[in-house]
Length: 151
Image 1: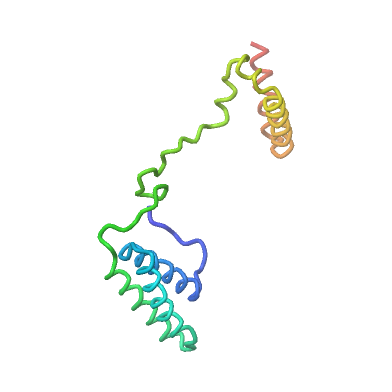
Image 2: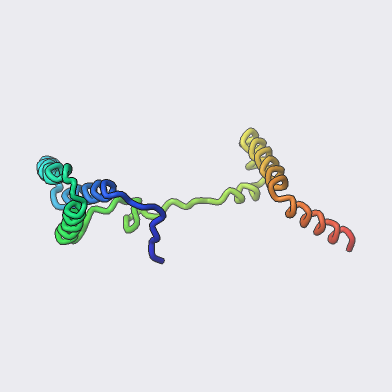
């Protein structure tokens, strides 16, 4: 599914994003810290040289040219952080849903009495809030109880 932007992005935000991506690209090419820092200073100089341009058409032209240059200089094997999409540890951490705790054995729950007491209290508070917010659901539940007990 295509990404639909939810907000407008200003020109300065686009320039900042281009600058950050260009630094990431430099880090892909220059793995030694002193080489990377030297290239980063040169890159910053290029961005600072054009920061006071008032003509938005020319500024937009420079932005488009910068995007093209960045695309042409991409590294064939960019550095990908482990937890980022495409990284070695992406989606590795399993997120266990909260309802699993409801099926713990009572002896397991007894090891953490304060936690489970507070958890039950929070569940009761949530149900109370839900019934106040959606009274029609409360009516449906009561009708279902009547039907079950009547049969």
